[in-house]
Image (cartoon, rainbow, N blue to C red; front, side, top):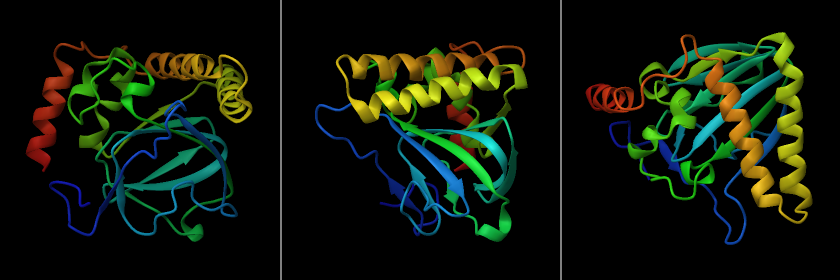
Amino acid sequence: MPVMGRSADVRLIGYPRTAGLPAISVHRWKHPHDALPVPVSGSHAHDFLVLLYLEEGDHVLRVDGRDRLLTTGDAFVVAPGVVVTPTSSSDSGAARIWVVFFPADAVDPAAPASLVSWRTHPLLSPFVGSPRSGGQCLPVPPADREAWLAHLTDLDAELRDRRDGYADAARAHLALLLVRLGRLQSGGPAAPEVEPLLAAVLDLIDD
């Protein structure tokens, strides 16, 4: 399915839901040796949200035709509809990258999940600007990186081990990551009653 307002050769990838399982996926990706966590060649976009965290090294991420250099400790958010183009190994150095995929309802099952209405959720405010800026990079201070790794590791373990209560625990770890992400925004998150509408208008103009 092509992305509206984009070239017809850009695929829109839907989140692969499985009945009874939380809609959260975690991948620890080692570049350049491991395969991409989404097995798609060429430019593509997602109907879900993507959070990357660069544990170590550096990596070039191409979003909306713009190369973004990520270095150790960078968190990078990609909103639904942003076009991502896989880069070759020559474009990036060695890196260890965590990638978290999730639709808006994984954070709050009652939250609206359309490409516009998810913007009103306060925990998702860091993603609001990314459709018009080609993603947003938020560097994590060195003192906070251990906590980020702990949440990512625990989230991954909950989803893999599936012990009693794991779905609630996974949502809790994701929520805590999003809280930490929001605190990285300079000046704090934008007012939810103003910024989502402005972002939607700018997206329409971009398209």
